[in-house]
Image 1 (cartoon, rainbow, N blue to C red):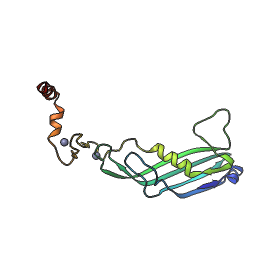
Image 2: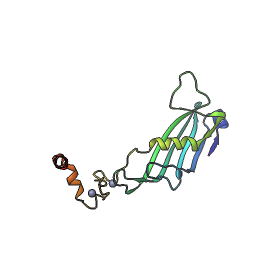
Image 3: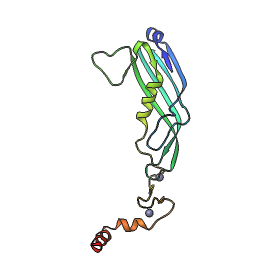
Image 4: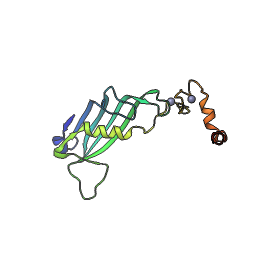
Length: 165
Ligand SMILES: [Zn+2]
Ligand SMILES: [Zn+2]
């Protein structure tokens, strides 16, 4: 969504409501496509004493995949963002300032990068997820397998190497 902010930048006290959906269905995060349904954006852009600020909330049900056992993890997410919008960067450049070229805000672009930066780098289905067996691929949360024990004992590994030679 493109939002024309020319009037808002001129008139102190002016505000614009945001209530729209963001399509992030193309976004891939590891093995997951977290946002198959639209992300809802809700917020306001205000001109307070000449300072234009954007504050909004992004809400969705995110579909992650457990980093260890690959089980689907569906979780509601609510992210809040605040930005100061400016017409141009001045001498003291500041990462928190968002420059709005031609006073038209590309909300989709801004919100997409906001949400992507907020996504967790690792998701677990539960704190103590045991993951998949690296040898046979069994889900260790559901079943135990023989291969793990053989692998884990380093003395046995050394012994089996000696026997091979
Ligand atoms: Zn898991
Ligand atoms: Zn196994």
